[in-house]
Image 1 (cartoon, helix red, strand yellow):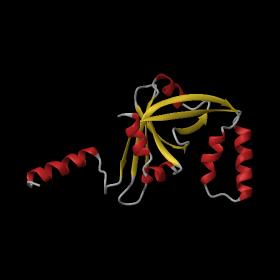
Image 2 (cartoon, helix red, strand yellow; image 1 turned 90 degrees about the vertical axis):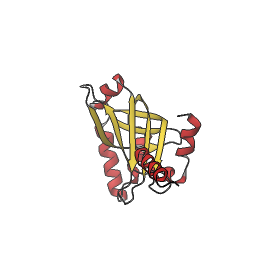
Image 3 (cartoon, one colour; image 1 turned 30 degrees about the vertical axis):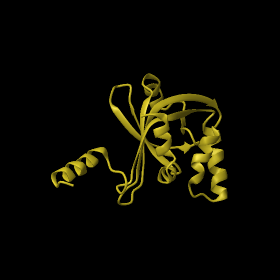
Image 4 (cartoon, one colour; image 1 turned 180 degrees about the vertical axis):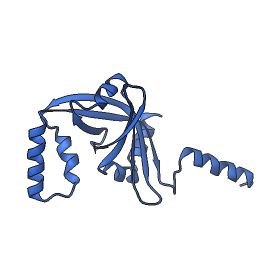
Amino acid sequence: MHPNEVTEILNRPLSREMLARDLTRLAYVATDGTPRAIPIAFTWNGAQIVMCTPTNAPKLPALRANPTVALTIDTEAHPPTILLIRGRAELDEVEGIPEEFLTMNGTYTMTPEQRVEWEAEVRSLYDRMVRIVVTPTWAKLIDFEETLPTAVEELVRRRAERQGS
């Protein structure tokens, strides 16, 4: 997929709504060769998906060995809206708490007092974190109105051919 095609998909209003959500599912291959898909908080900076994790997270050795990842951001309503993204994870270990971590966790409903407590706990727990940065190289938006999963699109096409449309 060409970068301008990825940009066009990610700039659609529905994609922007999906990129403003709190959680994505990060899929990668673990060091034992088996697949993993984990929920993780993220933020979209306009060009990249940024996730943050502790420096001792089991996913880090796997991402260093094989940085190819897939992300799914979706809704629970019917019909679901699904944004699929593929790319490579770049790992950036930083001192302290990345601003993105505080931002992505700022969308949860907390009283001001709870927020202060949460931030104090986070700052006491992490002296370093790893930013997982994914630049999308492929994207597909599925809304079940204008866009469908590829296999369903093919079935619709075949049915139309059978019916002579």
